Amino acid sequence: MSDIINISNSAVQKFFKTDYLDLMQMPLNMTFPTWGLIKHATDAVGDVQSHGVPFSDAGGFSSGKIGDSSDMDFQVTNYTLKQIYMIEAIDSKTINLSARDEGAFERLVSYRVANMNKALNRHMDRILFGDGTGALGTITAVTTSGSDHTCTISAATWVRHRFRRRDLLNVQAIANGVYRVKSMDPANKKVVITQISGSYTPVVNDKLYIQEAKDNEPQGLEGVLDATTGSKYNITIGDSWQATQKTTSNKKLDIDYIAAGYLDTMDESNAAPNCLVVSKDQYRKLLVLADGMKLLSYQNVASGQDVVLGNVPHLFMEGTKIPIVLDFMVPAGRAYLLNKDFIFERAAGKGEFVKGTEGFLHYEGVSSKNDRYSMIYRKYLEIFIPPTFHCVFSSLSTT
Image (cartoon, rainbow, N blue to C red; front, side):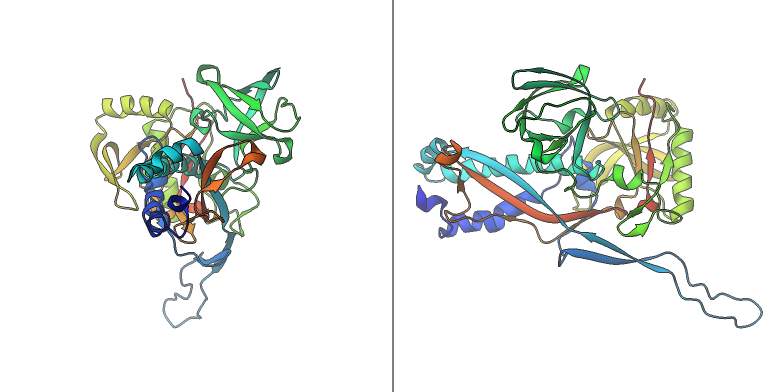
């Protein structure tokens, strides 16, 4: 078994350095498609990224006679790449049994890497719609029985697919220990977590986080597009660097409201949004409304990677067709009019599978009481979202 998992094995090197890295780059996920629709670049060099952003046209126009010149207003964005990890465990017995049949080990690991890709896409889509803090939800009520804590999540922060059985979480602070998701009750917005380390007991108003993620995740749409003060990417939020924000409480997402967001975004950015992303609650109501008004057509949508979402409903707006994309990571009371050409994953390469002394599979060992190996995928990236090109609808009616 040692040879088949060893870094010196040329076949294993090919799998982990080429084939599996390519597999981890596949972004399409029909349940969480938005991550696959944005722009992806793997050419970032260095920890801190800087871009010049024009805030004006050339200002030297005159009439009647030659006037003075005026420099363009360029401001510089700065942001630091974040580390993300995807870890998958395989027990030693399974590896031993697979190693005895030629090709079985490859099939085993390929399946696990495909599972890692599926989970990674879910988390990246979650991050894309997040606020950059890594928060999954805010506790409004909690009951404790032994090491199990039943947490009710607020309606405003509840998104079912932020949670999966066996996900490892922190509560309020990384130092408070690790908790494992045991079960969920989506109808009542509840999640049961089992404490596996630490002694902290969750209380009302605590927030749940993916393990180690608190304040360590890339920027997301909620954090960037909801901002009204402060700065994003080292540029002050304000004129020409703020999203169009539609925040009327309990407002229905009807055609007039969408048109207002669309036109206000065009007015601010001189570019038209080209994608409407909604939760399942808003999707159902919007399709019924738009179909009744004969404002829908159905066609495919190409992503930044030439991947296609098939037969997606499109809304007619100012002579153009805007795809209505259903994404299960969008909270029920929110929707986004996005220009997907101005949302960028900036990554330093395709990422890598972390190599250890035993190769690409890391033995967890007796000390952790786990007779198993783990694969660790690591990537350095940030999500760059110039806010001016987008519109966010929040506090929408969900009834």
